[in-house]
Length: 330
Image: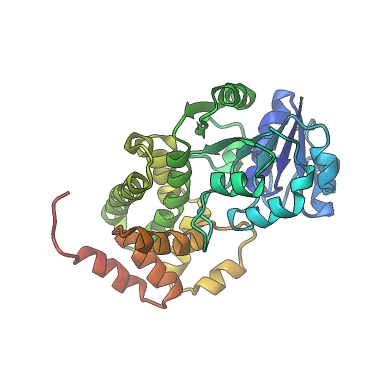
């Protein structure tokens, strides 16, 4: 069966490589023709995964029609803030009742839609069968074959069984969770907390502060999820606590690197100008900050990250305000 992976960044390429290495008929769509040519001719994606070799079985193309022709399943790895427009413009390529697995993490700015809601609304009438793949997984480690476990949020048992079997290998393990919303929210909000952790580390505030941010970040994530109808237990799993710990502590985390640079004195514009990969947490901070106000939920870490990124607040003052909030029980 042909599997189409849409998005030639680090994560889309890594997922495509898992399938190709396993022997699946994996096709990767890249926005740039030269990127597709590099994958096909050299077996590399040096822009996003420097120094790593890809499976010789992986095929790539910049022609979306070619990648989606006769496909059996679509993996979406398009940046979350661009996903709606991408689907709107290209929905005529998608078959009816297609299995769609989203690998993008975030909440849409302005509409507050999760990626599942984006897919459902933008592909309305095509009845897409939806799943979301999330969890602690750096793309470079996945390509290198290092052990990785992720969560698959899917309420369709047949699709869940298919995707779980499709991706699972000796080094890539998939756990199914029917709480699609919880899996999506964990993957989105952890990026905000990674920026906060990076800011703290950039300021030199140490391990204690980072541990506090991770723990209170989990509380914040769970509070938002509960208000939106997700299951609290989901946030204790791979797509919640697992991804939160990884992105708040790992040097490969793009969102943590954004926070580190800001904590060390750079502006957001300077940081983003020097990045190839998209740091989804930046726009997600805007979306979740506004969503918290809409729902009347207290999200103090998100609020301070928003103030630092978009309101020119001094990072040290933001951390100080978090530490001097009114005392309360845990």
